[in-house]
Image (cartoon, rainbow, N blue to C red; front, side, top):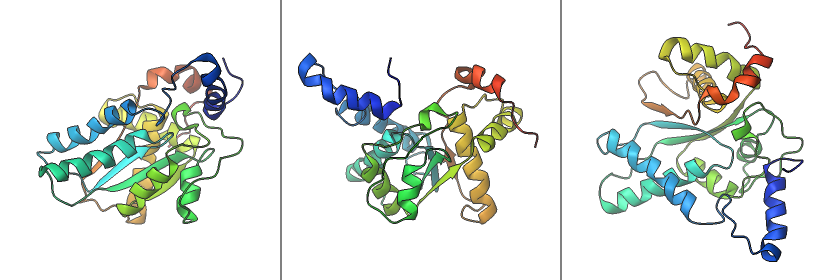
Length: 218
């Protein structure tokens, strides 16, 4: 157990791996995770009959899924299975931990560590993503966006999605639903656009959190 956040775990691994003979399997320190996440991109294209949606909204902590999808789309084009058209990639983070959003808004190539990171969405509680520059490249190359949503916005979306879709979203997925709502309101996404959002876990993993802090009334 580590008294800290995920970046503290990574630091400890970096300090100890040589002395202890560990093999570092953390995000982007080995090839296998991004190659596995890449299959998300293959699956999207296959299920949409070898085309891609207009927009993909992805909850971004370490961002491996977004990086993997972007890699997959390039490979699919090289294979001749899809064309050059790409979805606009949207990175969604929590208001209490949004290093990618800040870097995107400030037109920076990499992100600075986020101080005092806090959010109920543990998958978004990543103060510094090792692949930050790759995430930002994919967003910008696709003409996409990066935005943050509050914990209250996430909590409000969980019952809404449950009532309409019968799916118990985790806060990370709910963050994507909140982002979609905002992007529709601003006109960045139009009703005719085909949009794919990701729910990366079940709300069942967050029962203690959801019981402690009930969602605000809509």
